[in-house]
Length: 410
Image (cartoon, rainbow, N blue to C red):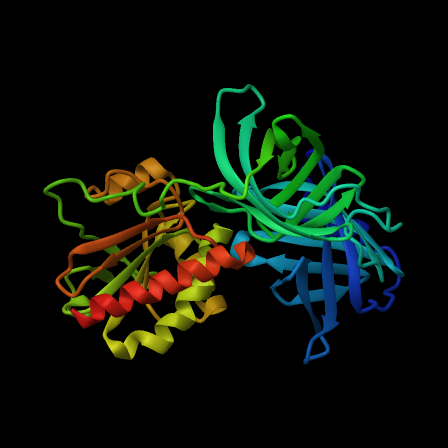
């Protein structure tokens, strides 16, 4: 159910009782979606200043830091400013209830009910019910819109121990990040909450003449839904991410966009001349882009002395610097980015392609373009396989480093 609640109304309701202490530790949290309850973990610990709390969202192996949380008048606020969202909940002992909300436009917020219980660390099922199937391995997957007009190919990669399972889905435009859940009998249950995306996967496993299959539903956010099917296939694969986007014949890649300070940065600037340059097409709203940034930011600090440069081209919800500049700056601060990130336009793929006319198209955020010392595009990688993909992430890192080393040696 979609609720539109004002912060003022919620705050008034939450200040009626005397303040009680907030219990630190692990909380099992849920938000309500059209597909049912979506569970995730929250680890809440007192901050060093005793006035705030550090909070991590827990999805399998991932511990994703939220912004510093505040607790006043029995109300806990956990902001996720990068994604313009927050959890606001009233605490009553070892229970908290409230909303997760995300800004849509202006002062309008999309909100859904939130609840958490202290001391519970299971995902979907508390009773240890056994799994009757083991889904470890690779699955050739197809997602379908509810009207059947749109399909997306994917590869599911799962690791299961007992009735606990973790993994993700890789697609041509990126992955679904860290998914965690349970296998109960022949039912697969997976979820992820990262402050921006709310993912809930459910499926039934079946063995038949054509092999093992999964048939289920996928819910994203409060209302979006798809169906999906998968077939166990150790050789499942996706199109080559290096062949989806390319430079048009006879075109030369270039750009000129402003930083949040309004300083114009161009590919023809001296800082890029004679250097291997990595161009990151991204958005501050995009969790896959944040995974790539979490790789590129420390990589740049370690490798820039070798003669490499990195520059980010941010395509945001607004092309107005007064609105999007602060978002870019928050992203730079959060990830310690020391390379320029420019406001290049709005987060529409067609508009991004218009802003970079040398490209045949922009298929995904992120897209990574690598140029040699002469300014020639040598490689374009569509999407990003983040750390939640395991060996696929390791493979990307190895190939990326290998290509940079090769270009530096030329």
